[in-house]
Image (spheres, one colour):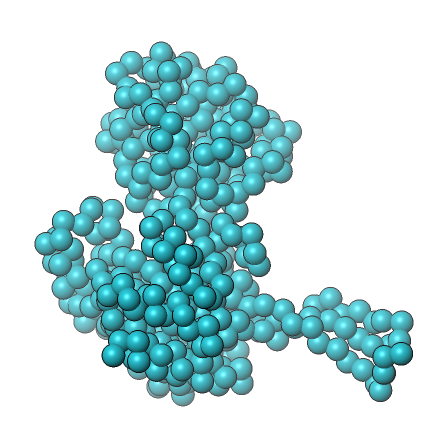
Length: 417
């Protein structure tokens, strides 16, 4: 029965996606504003439903990081509403024509941005993803198929209900938001076979979920497995900048994929930098796991193992390594990283630019926290996900990444010779 339900939801999403093609930017923007207003007006209802999920999470002994992601505070609901308003303010990419050239025979050839069609989102914990992805898909002209985790079923159901009502009041087919209310694992596997109805799958969650999706999907998958993010403190770093950047990257919200997991420190500044930096981390409850050179500078630190360099801790745990220069830092990132986010702290322009060129991650920063690797922070409005797959999108994905380009041609009777 659950497969029949999922197929029905996907069919409705596919049919409704056709109606989005005729919507103007104004119609989509008005609907997004109405959706934002509806979330604010329904805050009490959303929090009441969220409380059901939080109580279940406590009974199931979910981690503090998972509960943090799951919680719909007043601030989270307001940020969801603001994200929809920000999406409404962004330029509409649909219909944009680029690269128009005139061929020798007079034929005009260019490209036009079009929606992908139906985008399937499979995600865990964060109920704000429900509103963010629905808004991004609407603005980019796509229908969306949502399958959230069982730990957020009450919250997600409530958010979808509120958003669908706002769409209907805006004169838009509410089936453009498809929501799968089935929480068992088979629902995901069934969804991944619906290549006739769903055009792209974007999984958001832990590595095990994403690998399961990739292994079983008959539909193209845009993914990132994990966020093993690095900061390299170069020998020419301004250490007064480095302290708060490193602290913010690790401590502000350790349970997210753009949090710092490994700190690399250039040997010439290690003795000056590490004692104070590690003290600051430890005062904030961070467990340090250091290489031998780190432990020779600061005593009482747990030894890092090779597995720690690969680890996405998602917790107040940090691996620290002293390296000999820029290229050893880059080699470490290449060996142990996940193509997510890396940052260099330096006042040396040449090394900063070399780091930008040679580090093969989807986001690379200079003198800034890894926590900025986020669609909202990059001006994309909300983000539908982060891609570390080198296909049509790389890094945080916004509206334009939910469109593709087709060729368009204007002729005046030309025929091929």
